[in-house]
Image 1 (cartoon, rainbow, N blue to C red):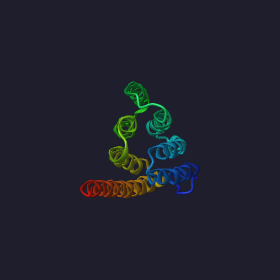
Image 2 (cartoon, rainbow, N blue to C red):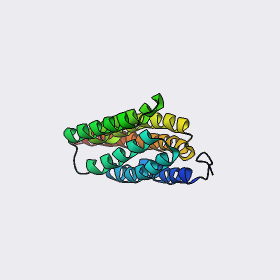
Image 3 (cartoon, rainbow, N blue to C red):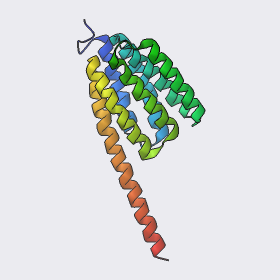
Image 4 (spheres, rainbow, N blue to C red):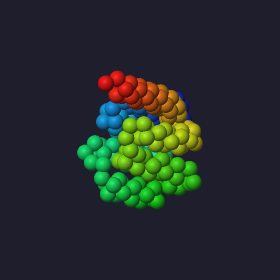
Length: 180
């Protein structure tokens, strides 16, 4: 069975990544999002390795490590080190122009994971979703195409909910300060 078959082993790992990925972006708590996203990245790594997309596989290993480390530190130096590692792995694995797509997505997400939070963090990750969707279309990753499309929807929904919640809180604060 070829890896392009919807039920190949490679594609099945992509479907498992899909479940963890969508679940992660439905989380309002950054910590839960990062943990579930790290698990997604492990399955995604195996998926892309089996599809022969080594740059995407290496991007996912770095992303899994990034998410776990970012639970303990937000150090710009650690983010920089992970960026250097990603660039090194990219230089070693990229064989075509399409190989740059997951590398760029991972570099942007490293910044987001370490330096942003809340809605800004999710907007950064939404940008990365666009890069990953492009990568997945080019890789013929069925689970990946579905995953990134669903992540875009789940993340957009969560961003909207968080935005509305922050507006409600501001209105309540203004209302309570106006009534002494």
